[in-house]
Amino acid sequence: MIATPNFVYIHTSRHGGTFVNNLILNHIPDSRLIQYHGQLSNLPKHCAKLPIIGHVRNPWDFYVSLYFNYKKKKQYLFQIISENGTLDFEETISRYLTLGNQSEASKTLIDQLIDAAPKEIHPQLDPNLRNPGLTAKHFAKYPAGTGYYTWLFKLMYNSRKKHKLHIGRFENLREETMALLKTTGTPITPGILEYLNKREAMNPSEREKSYKDYYSKELQLLVAEKDRYIIERFGYTF
Image 1 (cartoon, rainbow, N blue to C red):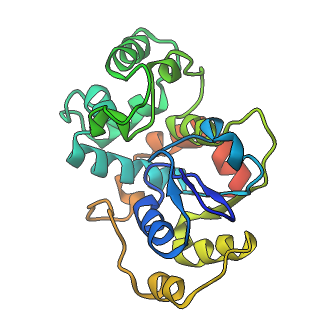
Image 2: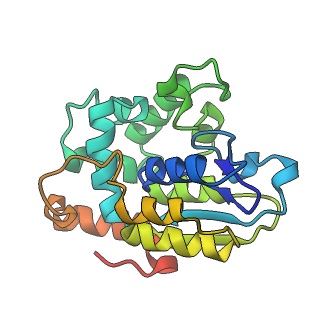
Image 3: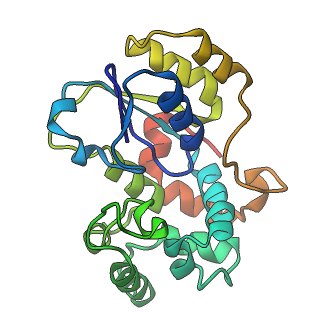
């Protein structure tokens, strides 16, 4: 989460956030990092009236990006769900999608995530535990029947207060980010223009194929079922 004089940016994991963070912190004056993957519910009171910007991603593509990036980083959630990276894409993502189905396997994973996750997020935490921005309390309240991406997206933007929310699509990250900045009244400087036009992508997932090539029909349909909220709200298709 980054606060600027004109808006607050919510950085959901695997949504081009490293690229956008760098843009904001280096090219928008008086911008300030509040928490790396901070959630809207933790927004400081003095920022409450600012518009909120962020991005959404095709759920099927999101899980492919998650799998390859988290596997490389050995992110602690991924290590638990994938049995230390020994499970393949299909098995791992199936587990992400069915975390809340109340099966014994799901309950075991949730218990392991609760034990591994920090009680609270603070600067002294190991980055591997701090950066995801997720706590034991979050996993203890994991809802039934919801895909991991839908759960995460709702968690990032959930707030008891009403906010002006503007969501761009990851698939057109540069153009959509420019539109979001303009919507919030942020001055578009030559530095911002050059960055969005010329800066290389940052922290991409390393994959050899289109996201579609990683899915069996069964897994494709499981995403469609569990992440229906994202798919229908933003009009995504496989």
